[in-house]
Image (spheres, helix red, strand yellow):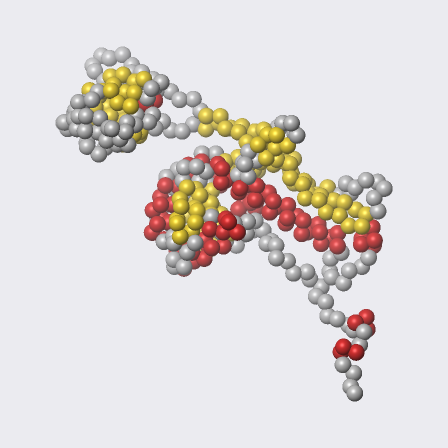
Length: 372
């Protein structure tokens, strides 16, 4: 009978083993690469702070469940601090102009003269929009009351992130068939693990200073961004994307932003028409080959993220690269030979002590539940 392969001991067979190790892990974290290359700032303490000043608001709403009669002169609003005595205030829905005579910021109450312009006073509903048109001053008047608002103090923490790996002395001395020795393979793969851990915390992390254990966590995008949060509720059309997402987020900040996109979001945008997509020249400066979406309101560089999976597979984020920073207390370092002297082997680790600074949260956005 002829000899079959099963008759030959495996030790005698020359089995073809690929020299390369296939990896499921992505090679880059596109938006993190851009942030680390261009928006990195050192900090001198694990807690870092910054101040933000919002341009003084001109709009507020009536805050009274029953609304007000056409002759009511004392009105409760959401934010009375945007008004001062002698301001003129327009009720957007009815067109009525009122003259403000007094402001009580403690109770958010304004006192007004109704129907001060050409439009007669009318019933005001709860949540009606009011806009301050400025003031109307009499001749030879003293200066009006100042409206001053101090900048807000905001803070976050640097968290310590460590990704250890090691091999025994025997493994280090042994020769592997593949191109990389085991320690070299781990050095490469664990660097990707470490970057993915940083990205997950920058996306989903929450701020905490555990003083008793001397442990800190940094807050990520999902907790920072509270204003522009759009729930697609399933299908996201191009028209909805332009109107409900791009229109409000491009009202503030830069006209070129990053779309940290789930794989599903990338597919959704690709389905809207290839003419809206082009190669991003801005991304090439960082060694990245990314596409960008041109909306009527601004440009989005599409930075796919493999971290947006499972529950977050239908989430995406828009970030303004001019208003986001990676704060560094200890930059990412490969620490070799951190094992005890009597260890028969080698232990290494990647270590970072960093945090995320996101300024002017209205410049950014979250997209939820975009499934098709």
